Image (cartoon, rainbow, N blue to C red; front, top):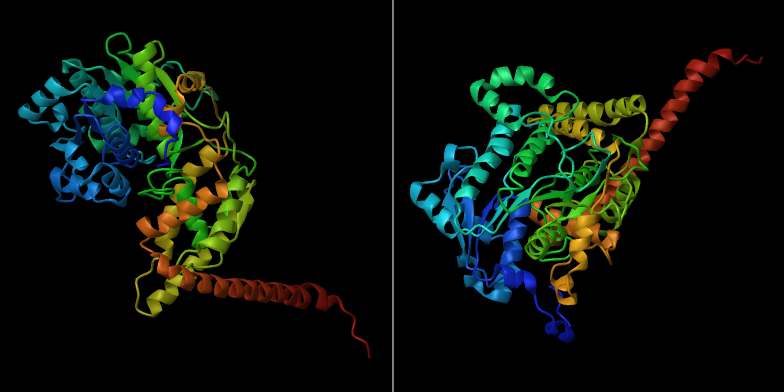
Length: 506
């Protein structure tokens, strides 16, 4: 974290003061944004009393085992260094699951949460766009209702902060910080989904969704509506982050624990397996570095405490900073080709965005499917399992989601978020940075690729020289192949189209 100038110490840190001696209950604390939230609370609001995480058993690992794995992540190295290794002892796991009745809490744990909790961050959700509707409703809608029911029983509750999404009202091309009607009655949807089995729900899903492209947007809109219904009954805040991307500044520039969204596209392109995309290259999306989003979550709680009349915050960036899809690809290509190449690239990075679906489909067949079939056939002949067609199927599924969002445009009005920012003093603006001032996109993408190599692809830094050599080799292979292909095409045109009409001379 950037050291504070001495004069900044003259200002109070009202965010840290708000969390002092408080007990915070968090769902989704083992997810991407949840981990960064926990780390930030421990590092910048270390005077808090405790953080309670609702954690389910997963892959035969109990909640206490999972929380230890989280705390051993490199993400928490800085806070341990600054606050001492024992700071993580302020984080407690309680066994539970938002998909279970009564959240799967034991009577003892439920009573403890009701007696002690003062601030709730409800972050748990499935972020899979193709999640079966029944599962998405149980998690994103009924889970939110159960959390609200618990919040009503919390004796000391001061804030219930719900993490929604800026992309849950897709029919609104301009999204304001206000309540929107849901696409259906969330209470009726919950009852219907509970009553029907998954097979029947899958059958009627297209009818239920209507023109909404995926179950994620549908269920997040319903979950948000449940929280909005409690605006007059509970101290609720609705937060709408846009596309959350890796850490910009702290604690580790570029850190991520997944390759969803733009990071996945860059890695796929960098490995040489993505060669074409159907996309309006001049269009732009709205991106939010996860550390900026988490800072905004904390700042919004301060703003609500101070003013109380602002309850919905669009955590978005495109009103201030716009970067087009073509700029993202160009910067990513520059970083991966010249600065931090990936190991074992399948082909030299290339390809382009297509504005014609017909052209894109042809390119997908030529540069994705046919090479994958060829390589998989070769692998099987050599006695190995085929892999590339499986990869291409995943890419195709990802394209189905990407194309909808990349070829449509939304704008977000975040006046209330900007007002909340304006009330921060210089010290708070330094500790809880919520703007993009000073961002260097090349450095940012370089850090993202570096961290993805380290933490996702398990490619340590000592492999970078070999990756550079391999990238140069693939450059020559790519050029030779293209030359041979061009010569072959010219030869074919000569023999089939030109030569038959050449009159021989005697």
